Image 1: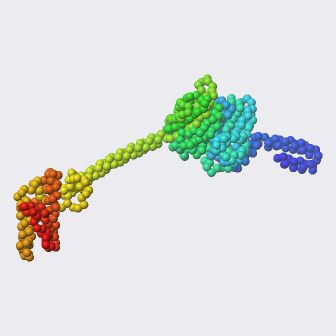
Image 2 (image 1 turned 45 degrees about the vertical axis):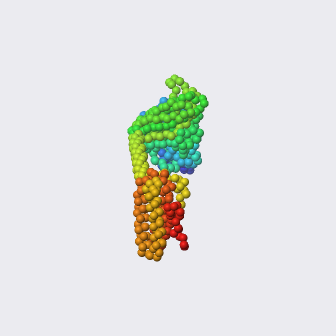
Image 3 (image 1 turned 60 degrees about the horizontal axis):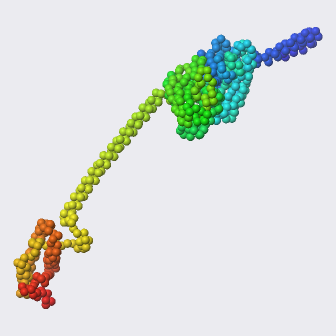
Length: 575
């Protein structure tokens, strides 16, 4: 417009000076008005709005829904609500009221929308109904992989009363980026204000799920387990505190999470569990430990949930426990997150001071947490049932194996006893066959080198005179028979056969007599030995005759003595 006016001025100048002066004054006035209009906040907002329409925001929220999605009060002290009386566009906006601290403000986690070392632009609108201009700041808080926070100011805006004011700012994300939080704050804690049409522009991460203003209904988590063995497990600071992953203390594994430099009793570790299924009962469990010298001997710890519900920030206690100093304490309880709840956060803290009292140093002690779990109760019961069945089954198997071992051992012992009895019976029978007696003299057994010949019969303890006379007569008869017969072989053979039969008959009688006279064996050793020698000689003679047809002779000087005790001639005399 300014250029067009200037062109008209030049044209009019060719026609006359007076007209020129008139149009020149009008053109200068129009140019000034146009410049002020172009650089006014309203014009700038419209200009930026036109630019925004040409690119797509990676995040936007216009608060047109009746449900507050994802937004919560930073620090927990304040109330969020959907305000339908004031809106920059549409019919509603988000209002914050009942603040207690300057940082108590609307906040939004944007972890899935930011990447490291990228540039992002944030813009939106602010409104309040105070009687004076108020400064409201928009800030991004970045946390790195070790939970150290850094802050980047988007803009600080002077907002006039009852006027929607546009803001915009550009920030760069750090190299080591773990999480991102967008929030607004105001030093005047009594100020109530509205925000609307919040948008973020920049590189869209691959894992971004689109609009964070809508709760994610597609994925629900049945369980959470945090043991800090591989990192912080997405735990972050709640309020002013510092979190350290450490191995100084741990319930299991090698690491735990340490919360220190706490300024408020509610300051401590927190984690988002927003994918928890609504309307389902979950079992929560955590373990805490403290050992500060200034601490009390016992300390009460709380495990609680914070979430937004129907525009209000809700704080629900799950469980509490009284821990003993230098000992790990367990906190456990059950809770059901209601349908419609958003931005669900789990946190732990020390006990709140009584109403009217102020927290003291002992209330702000540092503490450790470890082995935290959030499990759906019905699945937990199923798992317990399965584990119980497995334990019972395993115990039954062990009992059956034990019984099997006992039965097998019993059968083996019976078999061994049967074999031992059979072996004993065989040995006993063998001993009977071999005529082995347990009273045999051990020295005689050691000196024994030859097989004992069959034993001679034992008729009586001493030979009678008649037996001696018969024996002498037999010997004399043998001698005279030999001398008289000369070379007559027939008679000699007959005599030999008769002699052999007599000897065989004697051996048979000797064996029968031996069985009945075992009890008198020890008293007749000498006489039996002599008899055995004679019987052995007779057996040898018989074998020699059978094999070689040789006539053998044996004699005893005592047996061939004459009646006058003079020895008879030896049968070998003359050879």
